[in-house]
Length: 585
Image (cartoon, rainbow, N blue to C red; front, side):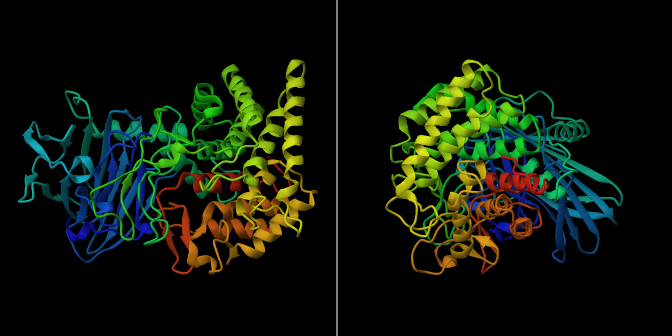
């Protein structure tokens, strides 16, 4: 791996995606991460994790500074390098997406004088184990294979193989002109001809315009719209949204906490759907409801915590034979499929209720609501792994989440027989709430579990969602306890692991910061809500991409990226805080 593609701090990466897969672009113009053909496939560009493989368009001038921005309402990224001249590279994964073929569009633009860049293609399937082979050039295009992957590069007829087997090409672009590169990557035979760059760019622009709504009425309008674009970029045509685009980027360096998040978590999917629903009845909500409905109707009370984007079970965890991101251990797969997570059933009910309020729930969705509610009735008193996927216990958050979900779906039942069913669900919610007398701390707040007196930021969520109202003293006491015990500089941690200072155990959890903003509004503190929101939405890099955690002391991003539920948290909080004094749950 060349020195220029060594791993960077996470804040320096931009993200491009088309819904079926996504890539990370470094400040040197190298795409260092892309799994193809789909999210959970092995990487073909794996330099991020210390493997082989990258696709770079880099200024041929060592003396430059880097910047960039997204085109509004899209994941079309513009890298910008300022040296002797100003050069930009417009980058995107072409849309609408083909599940079997990724199309990477790159347009080098000489915006201020003639541009000189160097293109390097080193496509290596199977996390870097398969070098390029069968390379040939015809009609101005290079074609080849890497393992079972086929590829074609157009716009690089002058490229040559170097001693390492890579395709390299110096490229000069006259002032005011541009040059297009199009790379296709597929697990099936490629079309007879490569895409026309102009048509591909136009189709991609139109696709983003169709899927990402304007957010003019929201606070932090640009950030909210960008969060929506990220969620759309992470969402497959199946409606499934991956939790993150990467695997094994450590949440805390050298702690062993490295996970593969390239799958669709039920809870995360519901968080995203609720965020979209807080803004309006957009297409992304329909896909989310469709995927959740299918999974609930298929698996019922045996609903798994996560699935592949195709709805299959997640493979078990295995170690990858590559170096890994510094401080991390590279892995593929996830052991979460062995868990039961009760709170996910409550979140499903919340999502379906939100869809019903917006008149976006079809008969299958109502059947899924009945199945999910019946599953809660069957399993609510069982121990589960909880929101943080820990050991099985009677987690307070899980039961509160189910009570909130039951109340939400009961509220949209309407009249007739549905009213009677709604009354049954409300009765079950009351029963669950009545059972939680042993989950109240002596100080009057909720505690994590009957046998765990600690406070947990997750306990804010079901309160925001309506498990209890703002007049319930446990609500205010929990909010105050989280602020007093789990906050640092307006960032929030999940829970206190031990006697160590919070920042020594893990990073601040950005989603918890957005929950705090909503909880503050819920408790009537509009000023505090704005403070929590503004602080946490700033914890990103220049590209506006969030990870799961934030190292408050070092001001660095930690964990896989982009972390979908953090972007969902930003979008939902922006929508809720845009209606001061009103509880929107």
